Structures are given as C-alpha cells and as structure tokens.
Length: 336
Ligand code: SF4
Image (cartoon, rainbow, N blue to C red; front, top):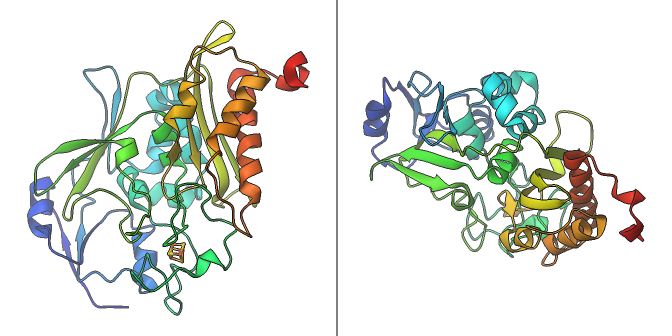
C-alpha cells in the first residue's frame, strides 16, 4: 500500500481548494469501495481529502416538486427516509437490494455513484487490466466473464457497473449535481457514467477535482407501478447478474409512460430510449411487453460465460412488468 497524506475539509469551498484538480488526490466519505481499492493497491492516491463534515446530508424538496438528496446522505438513511419510501419506492427498494446493512450504513449516495466495477481481474494487480493499466489487455474477454457485460461493451473492457441504486436513479431520470474547478453544474443521469470504448479507465464524466454534491429526483416517482427485480447468485450480499428497475404509468389498459433501466449488463445503468418509445400508448399485453424485452437485447453480445444473460434479461423484464402492474401475462390469450 502506498503512503498518502490525509486532510479533513471543513466545507465545500475548502474541499475544492484542497483538491485543486491535482492528480492522484481523492475525496473520501464512507470509503466502502475506495479503501478496499487502496488496500489492494489498485487506487494509489497521494492525498485523501475527508469530506464527511461537509453540509451535504439533507434531503430537501425542490421548487419543481422533486427531491434533492445530499451526496453525504448514507444509503441507509436514504432508503429509510419516509418521503423517498412513499414517493420514490423504486429507489428505496433498489438501495436495500444492494450490499449489506453495515455497508449501507457507511456508504453515501455520492460514493455509490462513483463505486468501481467488481470485475475480479481489476482487483488483481498480478494480471493485466485495461481499466487499471490502460493498454495492458483484458483477460475477461476470454476468461471468467459470467458477471460481465452484454451491452455497450468494447474489446477493451467488458466490465459492468455494480450499483443497484444507480439503476433506479437511471429509471427515475435523476440528475447529478456537482461542483468543481469550473463551477456548479447538473448532469443528466445518462451522461454521468460512461461506456468503456477505448478509455475504460474513465468511469464517469466528472472532471478532475469535481465533487458530487447531490442527486435530484424529478416530481414523478412512479409510486403506483414500479419494480426493482434483482437476479443474483444468492439471496443477499451479492451483485446482480441482471437487475431491472421499471417504472410504469398506466392509462386504463394502456401504457402512458414507462422507464426501464437494466443493471448487471453494461458499464453503466442501461437505458434504451428507442425501445421505451415503442411502449408509450401501447396496450399492456404480454405480446407488447415481450417485444419490448426482445428489443432491449437486440444488440446484445454474449460471451462463453455470460451469453445466458440475454435470455435472462428478457425474462426479467417480463417479470418486472408483472410485479409492477399486477398483471399475469401467462393467462392472456395472446400469450400463445
Ligand atoms: Fe479490466 Fe474491464 Fe477487462 Fe475487467 S473487463 S479485466 S475491468 S479491462
């Protein structure tokens, strides 16, 4: 483990000034992923800036009728918050599906956004990994890739984003608020995380020295019809093979609006806006839902260890619609 210096920031301005966009300087709050990465020598900061005392721990109504969740709110506090549980239950359920109670008590909303892949090769400094050492190679392409991506991957990296919370935030059309050397800004959720392309070592579109200050939820929380379905190797404390965050608004038997994000399948929470558009105004039937599920994986690429995920996604999406709407598509005549 490398030696590093440690400093505590007193407020946001102090944190930004202490970082100053310098290389190998990291903000730390819950540390539930960063400290692990430092221990195994994957992250080698020269300086850690502790931001746990910054005033980013409140959950506030926004003038637009949504909710703003401070970046230092813990995962547990967010999941237990009554307003979130009542108005955005999809988010509460996704958070509670992740990690363990102990980790959720320490992990923060901002840190959850920034956690890194759990690809085992990434954590093993004895093997190459393009995400850890750009240009060194990707042993997962032909190696153990059961947990890896089927959508949006590249020949440089097939890792997946590990968060459950982020899948729900993607489905809810959240925005990420930041502050940094170039001032404050809001980043639409689809633009926050990146696909690997030929720069798999860069996970997000944050600038160096930029800090996440909050996540903003729009007014529509889809409390009436939603589902977070997580399929994993065991019932708790396991990352998703495939997860589905589904939010539906019905108009009688028709779908008025829908948002569907997938986890465990790509380098970022996966939304397919073209596929979603074919559902708006369509009748809620098994045929329609299955066609949508098939469209989501039309460009999927499976490998030896993870090709099963393509079928798993289609079945999980249909199941998520059943949970969210209470409909049993198996009983429909058009079900075949
Ligand atoms: Fe590294 Fe990505 Fe390949 Fe995993 S999938 S070994 S993180 S380059």
